[in-house]
Amino acid sequence: MNIIMEKLRAIYDSFYNAIVPEQRYMAYVNGLKITLVISLFAVLLGVAIGVVVAVIKVCGAHTKNMIMRVLGKFCDLYITVIRGTPLMVQLLIIYNLIFTSRDTNPILVGTVCFGINSGAYVAEIVRAGINAVDSGQMEAGRSLGFNWLKTMWYIVLPQAIKNILPALGNEFIVLVKETSVASVIAVNDLTKNAQYIGSRTWDLIPPLMIAAVIYLVIVVALSRLLKIFERRLAKGDRH
Figure 1: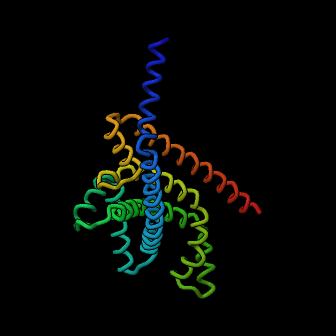
Figure 2: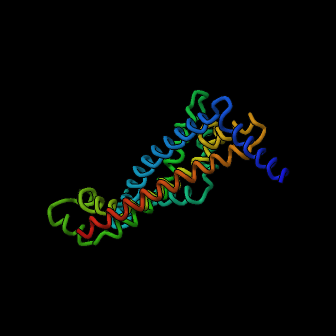
Figure 3: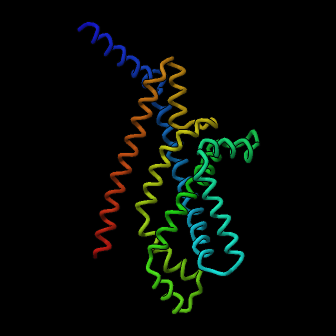
């Protein structure tokens, strides 16, 4: 019994040291803020890139315009490269090749890298949403005097975005977890700060477990919100 109590006491002390002394809990808070900032702006950048890439791919597949066909091929190459290489490798390449200045903000690098990475996946989501819209919508737009681009922008794309909003929400949830690799370029996110606390306490497991729990709580909370949103969206469609 005494041995069990001693082990429980040791576990308690290790987690206490990872949270309370020197206001270490603030490191988790500050790291979480950076994680959420990177995730939010990266998903916005990813959506912007994804929409443009998806529209170009769809246009390239339905037009005889050589420029659009070439751009479509470049978009295919972009998606293939991004989806076929590890995220951490992309992060290191962008950090060391593109952002070479010593004054480079690692948070900006992380946001750009995750945005570019997310854009490839969002592009395929948006393209699937566009293809799911009835082809008659495009014909209806053209009959109103819109050209292909205006019909896509004002009629087809809004319907596609509405259909894929849950998938975009899932992309944001995935992105929150993926930002944990940003610590490799010295971004003081949640994971990096947990590692720093572990180096101060000489016990890495408790702070990493705390970080893991925080990630889990965020993901579960976002998943619940997404389900609520999906139910309301479904009700709206029925009405």
